[in-house]
Length: 508
Image (tube, rainbow, N blue to C red; front, side, top):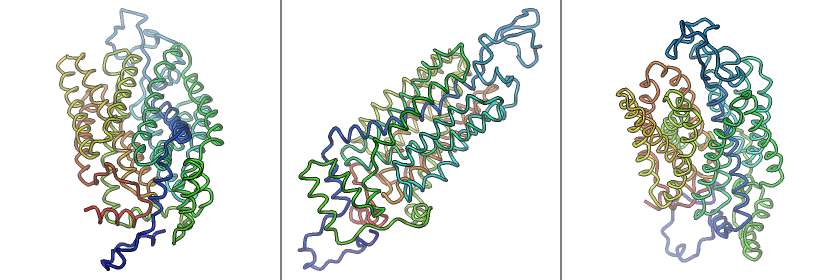
């Protein structure tokens, strides 16, 4: 497959008169242009993984929260007292001690490291798991198999966490949840992008991200219903439906025809194409695949072959490094801000609801950005997010708490739009042979940025500058690196590194 498109074009007039055979990319685009019920249903069920992924990403807002408390003895205790300097008999939790791991395991006076360990370990393993698993989707396991497997194992670990007896076992299981959660969003986005034509690619990518927002929005409702119950019920409510979904998806969701062809599995790819296109068109397109002069490349025996391809080319390595810097800043802000909502002085259920609701218009905005230039959109929203985050610290220090929550919402809204655009942009920048790996690396950068969030939020108990101030500076600076990424608005997906180079040389 790598040799199917020449890098240099001959200028011989006799060769120009001969019509060029259709490339695999053109045949696939033709087969996927008939967007019907089957494509929509496949995209819809793939997108549901985002719902369960979001629940595990943000469930710590409630399970790991510092619960409210009240004084039992007003002579030695007041609402402004330091709980760690009071005798245990002088105060009590407002609700049952089992409502949070902080109250159940007596972590209210623990160090910032111990208090932030579960969430940070979750994001650390999101980073590690993404690096270890990302190549499997490009090389041997495939997009669909890895997606279903990771969703099932994430849900199983989430179910097992209810049996935790201390913060160390709890953190270890959060490690497992993060490990298997790491590639779910990547596989879902890539699988959707490769199952539809370029006209529907941006919209279906938005569908997965919108599902993620709905999963986030479901948490305040689940948390409120269980506010007087054990934190373990939140994991049960989120893990059991995800396990059922994984079993269903194992039989219903199909593989990417692009990936199947790249692995030399033409028959399976053509079966999916025939099922997608109308009967007559599907037969013609399948015949066109068989008539191609060169057969697709066989599966690589090297597990990390896609990683090698990605960093072997200078242009590719430069782009992935820029993408990593951008998504690092996005991850720190996007996951850090919700964890710091408890310091805003508002009801935590309302604060989380507002942040979850603000994601819905962010997807509406993302949808209408389909016809806008990717780079300019990304730069604009990272800049807005950074400015609003820094301003929230300024107005908060001046006693304007009402303005602080609105600036926080504006910053969170902007970083959510930036996250949506960046993930779709990165999918379009790299060819099929390294698309899952490159997207996974970018998402792991999001997880790496998120690792610092819990520690910054813990430090912000004394000064908001350590959280929202740092968030603003980081996201603003990271957005500048969009200059190193090419514009991809309206560009068809490529399948090999050579195709990508050939296409860009001839569009300059």
